[in-house]
Image (tube, rainbow, N blue to C red; front, side, top):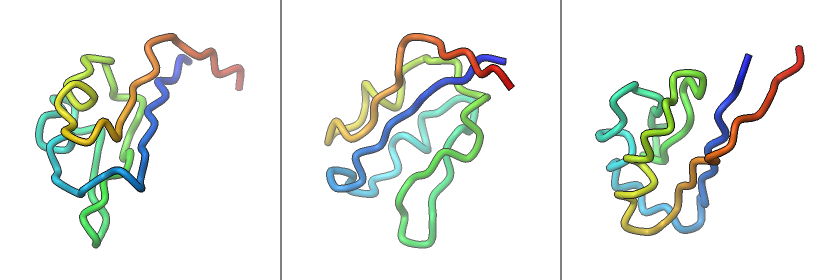
Length: 70
């Protein structure tokens, strides 16, 4: 199974919710403080909508694939 890696810079994130709203696969959720988190990273298709539209550059989608040898 191949996993997608998504990185958040929680210090830069302004809790705007753009990544959550734009994700076509509902990869993200928000906690009770409005901070986004990865709900299901396996749904990510690497469309990069979240990364490209983040006004604070607080999110990065790793473009390579990682083999998960479980």
